[in-house]
Length: 381
Image 1 (tube, rainbow, N blue to C red):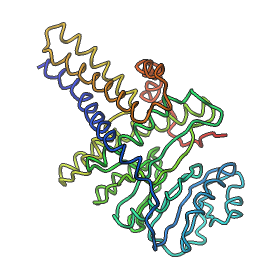
Image 2 (image 1 turned 180 degrees about the vertical axis):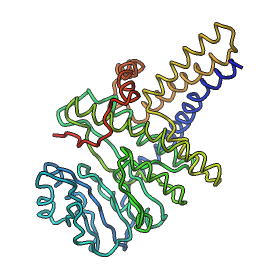
Image 3 (image 1 turned 90 degrees about the vertical axis):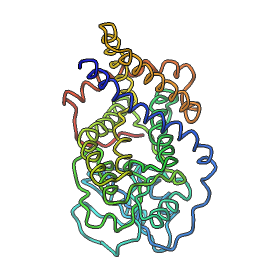
Image 4 (image 1 turned 90 degrees about the horizontal axis):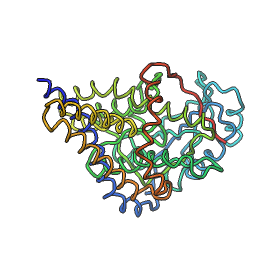
């Protein structure tokens, strides 16, 4: 009985590691095609509205607006929502030619567009990104998620290498693998496009740190699973200060873990009840924790399995965590060759197994409930 319980405990993270590894391998297979497929976007005749939520973004919103405006069609519009700003974000956006709504002000509602694109105020767009997003949303009738890439802050050369590598795995390589396997993708909160009908009447206001993921689940339940379109690429930068970077990472990972606890169980149950394979695939992908935490859990299972094996349990209690660790190492090497060599040196790669140790206190703070659940604007230069 005890042997079976221990085997079950060590099997769960191993299954999650297997999901992660399969997505990595599929992403590597799809990457060569992805790198050669970012041509001109298809022509569009429908209307698109670009929605840019902005809180105190006066220092950086103009480049984003210029990127968007350069890709708008004659009937398109850009709408900046100045959310509780204490600076002159609204005035700067208006002066740049954007429509502006101050939160709680219902002015200038206008006619509904065919497609709504949601973009953070600090993001930059590649040429054609808006067209790829809008056309794919209208043609498929599904939410579209762009390839959302992060970069080092200005003047920083090495310190964010691990974070850049981890970001590329989660937001580039794994979604590519999911698409190759016919799976939906998670929504990343920016660079998203929706047919207007999917958002009309839907309650989008909540206090969840990762509300985009919850929206992806809801739309998948409704039969419209999100689709990853890597031809549409947007860019942003990590926080400029160490404190800001830690706060940014904390917000993302806490939101991820909250969604695993709050959304995944119900989504899995509903996927079985409704025989909704895309929902099951999305929930399973969401179950994979941040990579550092997955490594820590795998190490803990290895220690537990080793003790159990020494006390007479079956060899499976030891071999399953070992195989899981092997997949983590192999998957990391494949990902590094595919998307990590320009941001992570060989030396830093070899030291990567030590990185999760430094995050023990980080995850303990989240687990203890001492961390804040309030959104705070990321500091940038």
